Amino acid sequence: MGAGVMKKAGGGGRRRRGSRAKGAVMSEINVTPFVDVMLVLLIIFMVAAPMMTVGVPLELPKTAARAVPTEQEEPLTISLQLDGTVSMMNTPVPEAELVERLRAVAQERDSDKLYLRADGGIEYARVVQVMGALNAGGFSNIVLVTDSGGPTLGAPETGN
Image 1 (cartoon, one colour):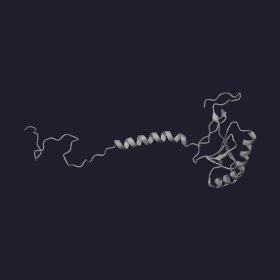
Image 2 (image 1 turned 90 degrees about the vertical axis):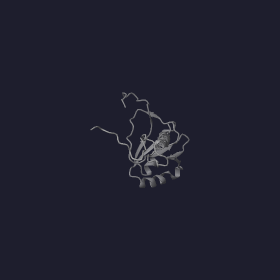
Image 3 (image 1 turned 60 degrees about the horizontal axis):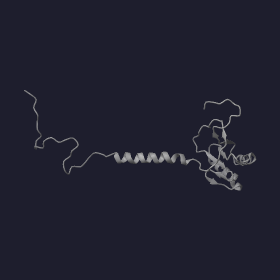
Image 4 (image 1 turned 180 degrees about the vertical axis):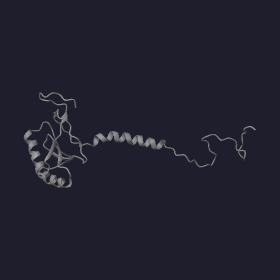
């Protein structure tokens, strides 16, 4: 009694792994094109994501203040440019319509927080006037947006 090798009926012989008979349907899924497309989409989104922020070009003042934590809602941003233009998100808004538009937006939002981006070259009085309009529009929680790395005015540096 010994072990024997049995041959399949039909005399087909041995088939190699991965080979198929002519005319047989391939039942394997080729994922290489799918992976290629996903990698291209990933690169596109990685490049495009930083460009999706508010696009009004400003020279923000620098400060040593800490960053404000992010919220669930998309932040409402008002930008005040050096030439005096006021923009809500990316859309310029005439000064006469600013309070009216803010009231309409305030009714739709859960938060009364608003981000004010003002160019560093604008006079303080102008920034305060716009802040008064924002308050009249229903937003009492106004965050002033600045760039980090500015002077601390004698305060010790923090490790943030």
